[in-house]
Length: 417
Image 1: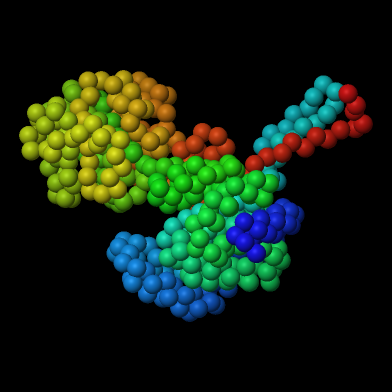
Image 2: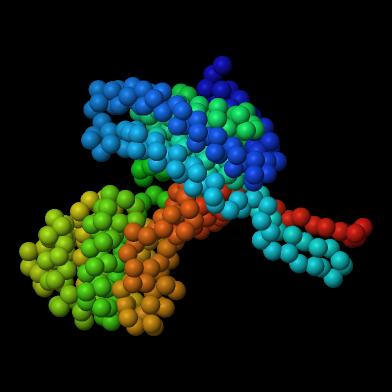
C-alpha cells in the first residue's frame, strides 16, 4: 500500500472511532482517562527504553542541547504526564453543554449545544509529552486524534500512544481513537492535512517553519500561531517600579517561549527617568538591549536596533526598546509589527488602558500584568492544546471548549413550514 492509501485508511479508521467517541458519556471518558494514566505508570520502563533509543539517535544526528532536553523523558516528566491526565479528569466536560436556547413564535424550541469536532490531527516536534497531552484533551472532548510527531521522537511517541490506547481500551475506548503516523516521510504531513472529509481540524505545534508548511499545504481548517512577537507599552502614566518588574518578568522569566516579551515601547514623557533604571535591571539578567535612536540618546551604549528588529521573535535574552511620542503611536506600531499574540500596557490612566485594550488587535491584551500569563493553566482552563492567533473558532489559549463545535437541536410538536 502506498503512502496516500495508508493515510486514507488511517483517516477512515479515525472517522469510525470519532463516531463511537461521540456516544461516550462523561463518566465513561473519565474512566478511560484514569485507565490511561495507570497504564502509562505501568509501562514507565518501556517508555523510558523507547526514549533512550530516540535520545541515542538524536545525539548521533547532532541535535542541539535544547532539542535533546525537550526530547528527554525522565521519571519526573512521566509523572507530569500522568498528573496532567488526572487533572483533565477533574475538568468539566464541555460536550453536551447548552450554549443557549430560545423559543420561536411558532413553538419551535431551538437549542445550541456543544459537540465534538470529530477527527483532529496534531502535528508537532520534539516533545513526547505532547503525545499524551493532546490525546487526553481530544479524548475528554469526544474526538479521535491522529498524531504526527517529529521523527526524532518516533519511538517515544509510539510507546506513549500504545500505552494510552491499551489502557483506555480496558474501559471502553474505541479502537483507533488514538493513532500515530508511523512513517517519518514528510509527505505524510501533506497527506494528513489534505484529507477533507476524514480530518476535521489540524493543529500544528512547533516552530514557524512547521506551522507555515502545514498551513500552506492544508485543505482542512488549521488553527495556528506562527510566532510570538509580543510587546509591552509603558505609558506616561505608568508606575515606575511596576513597569520595570513587568518588563523584567515578561522578558527574563522564560525567554524562549512564545509569550515572552520581545520589545518594549516607552512613552517619551517617562523614558528619561524610566529607561536608565530599566536597562540597569535588565543587564543584571544579561539581557542584550537594542534601542532606536531616541532610546540611545538616553542610554548611549545600547546596541542600535534595525527596522527588522521590530518584527523579530528573539526567543532569547534580547529586548528591543523604542521610544514613542504617545499611546496612539504605540498602538499603531504594535498592530503593524506585532504577531497578534500577547501584548501589554503598563498604565494607571483608565482612558489609556481602555484605548489600548480596545484598539490592539491581539488574542490576549494585558493591563498592568506580564504577557507570560498567556497559558491555558494560568487562565484557569486546566490545560491547553495550543495558542491560536487566528480569529475564527479559537483565539488565545485553547482549552477543552475550543476542541468542540456546536450543533442546533430543534424540538418541535409537529410544526411544518
